[in-house]
Amino acid sequence: MAKRVIRYDPHAQMRMRQRGISEDMVEQALRYPILERPGTAPGTLVREADIGGRRLAVAFELRPNEFYVRTVYWRN
Image 1 (tube, rainbow, N blue to C red):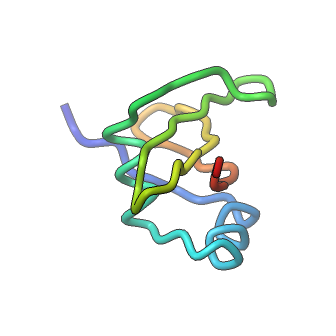
Image 2: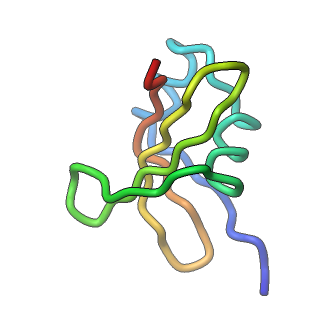
Image 3: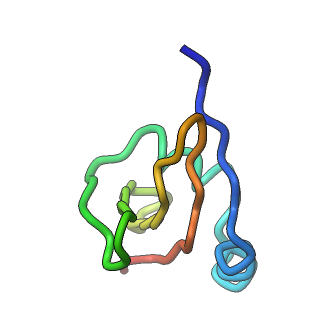
């Protein structure tokens, strides 16, 4: 099975720049989460990972062959 690609909503890209979150950090949270929960928007999920002593949350849609990242934020 092919690895899902990661695509970013423009809003997510803006938040990544504002919050100092790299694509590598997002990939770590998506591929190796410590927690997955439903998102607040219909059809979205949130995966979280501990990165650099902080908790990163990535809200995304799981689409065929891709993660579509809607937004990213630090939980602490």
